[in-house]
Length: 180
Image 1 (cartoon, rainbow, N blue to C red):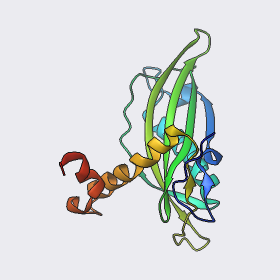
Image 2: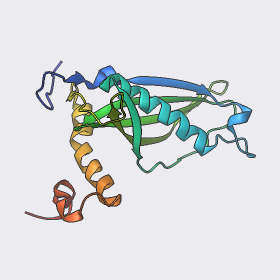
Image 3: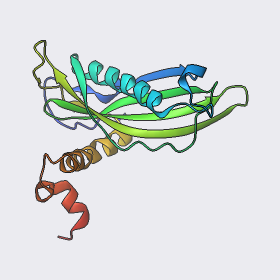
């Protein structure tokens, strides 16, 4: 196996150590009047899975800082099993980006489909609620490297949209749209 080292540090952890799989059965209380899973319930489950991944990586309490665009491709129905997979894609100074893939499966019919994917950002906190540095990430696969490389662009986009970074300072984003 080839190991890509994203950043050298004594406190680096492999991305794979943050991998989480969470399963939920869609029950009547989770659905709307059309017997579809309520979007807010799915976002709640996704937040839990992503937080567990972030806590496993950081060994700290974490709080949700942002949720990227979440589009629902197909309704998830009453009785379906929802599988949420989450894993850290990149660690920054005090925050981590987590990717989530959501699958729905109707066990009696044998059908399974991908419902959506998203990126969540979490910030690590100490016992007093102050931000603390997080371990860097060791990238072990080509797919992890691809997600790691794209994380800085996604982070800059989040910061620009939140008004925390000027568009002119988003060098990774500008490189996508300008020729050298």
